[in-house]
Image (cartoon, rainbow, N blue to C red; front, top):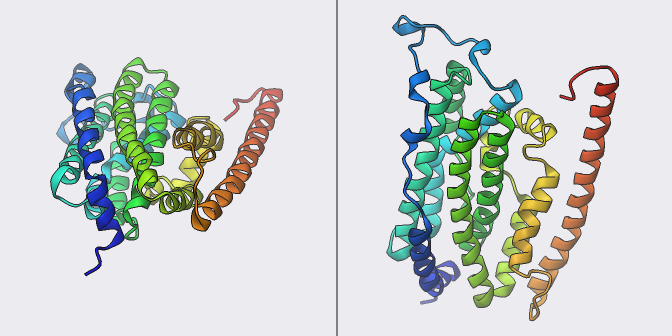
Length: 313
């Protein structure tokens, strides 16, 4: 009986998973979500005799509210992510231990971000809840991607999410929000390192298949929050504000990981790996060009707005 390729790869990577799980547990610092929320600012909403939400109550800008909402709604879909990653990694051994540890850590993110947003009245709680319901009912599916593609995707996705949280915190100009989202982004970075190291180890076991998986994920990359209602519009707002745009995606997400894996320096690829690498190189050039064009359009729009005495966004 032939062992499926993904199953065989899981066995070969088991030692790497265990090693990186132990590294993660040693590096991860315990933190308490409730310690990042200014509870003294909380008060009842209308149904309990308090005051209904009004935009004037928010101390962050409309653009910051959009970014905060997207960040939280992305975290809210954790049940779908858990299902998908457990399907790929399984429940047994170090793989299963990692799945549940990762899920437990990710769960803190939605808890503390939501508590902060509601206590400080940063966003419309009614609209937020309606979007949460719609997002979770839409769910998230990987389309039964094989193990290598899942590992490649989450490497890019965790780094992208880290930067989105970190940059959103800075953009709010609220020290409490920045402190909270910096803490969350630290978790995301540790998660990225775990997955990044699995991909590096996979290169030594199956270089052609790993190269193919990386290329496919770079070419098809989409943030997990793409199922959020009106995501395209919200993503455009976030990009125009410089919180997460094509330049950040190219310079700070894709390229650092490709350099870490030495994608363009490796030797010994077969036809499959070499073809994938060439496809990736071509796409990276296109992505860089697209990022430059976006920056030019954004700068031109900002200049026009400044000339008219208007805000850039």
